[in-house]
Length: 166
Image (cartoon, rainbow, N blue to C red; front, side, top):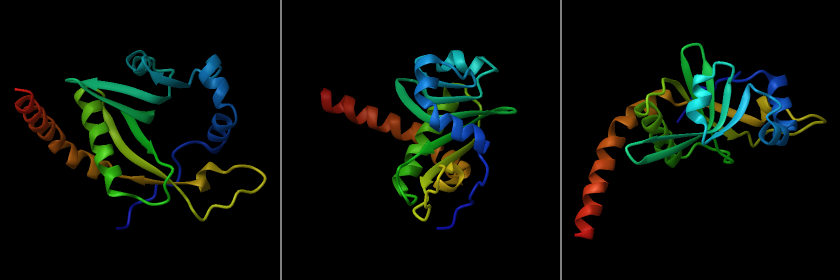
């Protein structure tokens, strides 16, 4: 299966700064443009100064999803699902569809959905090059198409679980 590679998701300097200073970003909030989402995701989505939310948490109808990276774009957000894998796996597509389903059902305008995997041909030089370390594929069409079935499947599983407990 061939996937479209997205060559430039973040500015290289911003990525390197984020990587080199991530503990400061998370602990001291020194970079207001990149935040750790967890509990405050709704608040961060409303704050136009926040450009990137790491570990954005969404809930809808007792379903919860955590997006590794939620990046603001002109008219919505992009989801980046980061995996420490060197290839695209089928199960990742289901995770992307679920994240897309929960986030959009919660009212977040998701424009694109990406999967980031490790480039197993990358050789680090003196400085880490994140553009070369990661391969980024656009799976928006796959995630949105599969998301249509997520809600149906959730209801099916809930009914099955209710029947088992009766």
